[in-house]
Length: 292
Image (spheres, rainbow, N blue to C red):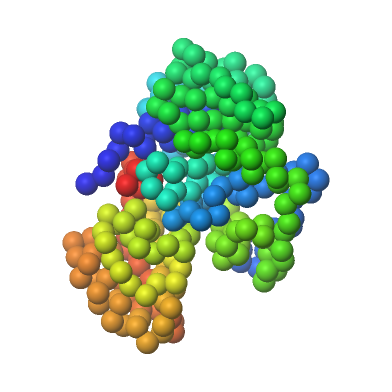
C-alpha cells in the first residue's frame, strides 16, 4: 500500500541529525535574532505538517532507534533537543523540514560524521551536510535546523528572515509570503496535536489517500492525536472546506465512493464543510505519507 523504505529512512535521518494553544491564542512576530522555523519552508507546498515533538517523544525516539541504529539513550538525547518540527512537500523529491530546539556545535561532531554517511559542504556563510541518501541538513543557528533535498533554498530564506515582513491577519502575525490560513492553523493548535493543512486538495488526496479525487475543495485542515491504549497509532480528523456550500452533500457521496474500503466516517458538517472521522494511521503510515 505504502512506500515505506525511503521516507522512513529520511525521517529517521532528519530526527537523528537534529536531535504538529487554542484558536484564540496568537503568535507574536519573532523578536530580533529569533527565527521562525515555519518561515523557512516553501510557501507553495502541497501539504504542511506540524509535530510538537515533546508531546510525541516516544514516537520520535522509537523512529530514531529503529531506523538509524542509534541506542535508546542516544535517541532520547537527540529528541530531547527538538521542540517543534514543520514539514512540507509537493512530491517525493521536495521534502522540506524546519526544526526548532537546541542544537549546539557539539551536535555536528556527534551526529553529522562521515562514518554515519554525512559529507560537509559550504554555501554562502553557512556549512551544510549531505547524506548518502541525498538528503541535506544545515544548522544555521543554535536553535534552528533545516532539512531538504536542496537545503540552500532554506538557507537563503534564513538569511532573508532578519528583514521578513509579518502581516497581522485575524489576530495572527503571518510572514507576507505565507498562506494566512495555513500559518495560523499550524501555530495555534493544542500542545499535543499533530496538525496538517493543505490548499492543494488534489495533491492532498494523492499524498494522503493515494487517490485521484477532484472536488471543489478550497482548503483542508486536519489533526492527529494519540489514541488512548493504542501505542503506535494516531486518530485522524480531516475537515474539507468546500468552495461552494451547495456541493457539500454531492461531494460527500463522491468522497464516500472514492474512498470505499477506507475505514472512515464521511459526513457533511456545517454549511460548507465535510468532516472525515473514525480514521486512524499507524506511525509507519504517517512517515510514509511524504514519500507518495
